[in-house]
Length: 134
Image (cartoon, rainbow, N blue to C red; front, side):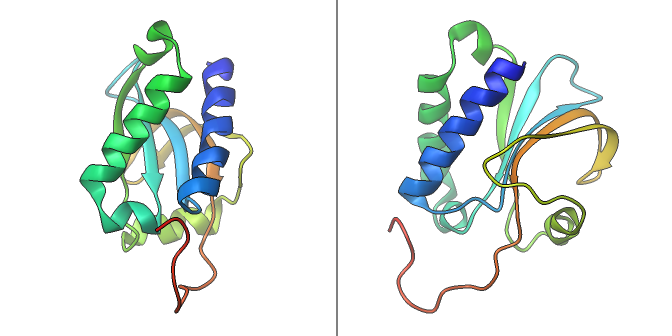
């Protein structure tokens, strides 16, 4: 799994440079879905067009991982920027373009056996001018 996490960490940094920063980019292994990881994402640019963002992220992930590695992923989950659990999550965890592990925790109301955080950071303030990557 560490190899997948490293590939996704590299891809997350590249996507952030192209599209804009992530507020959350993490892999969660839910208790009720053994051996299937969810990719959780949150970003201002994602909220602007969720369908396009999912398509874009899926293409990037598919290009980064082998077929065997892709079989370990279940889905991409968008966490909306206004989700109060996201703010609480940022209060507990801060990491950017790196890796932190969490085990046996309740996150976003889900029992999580294992999680890899690649980015979890609170955005300082919303820009008033043009946004990056648009």
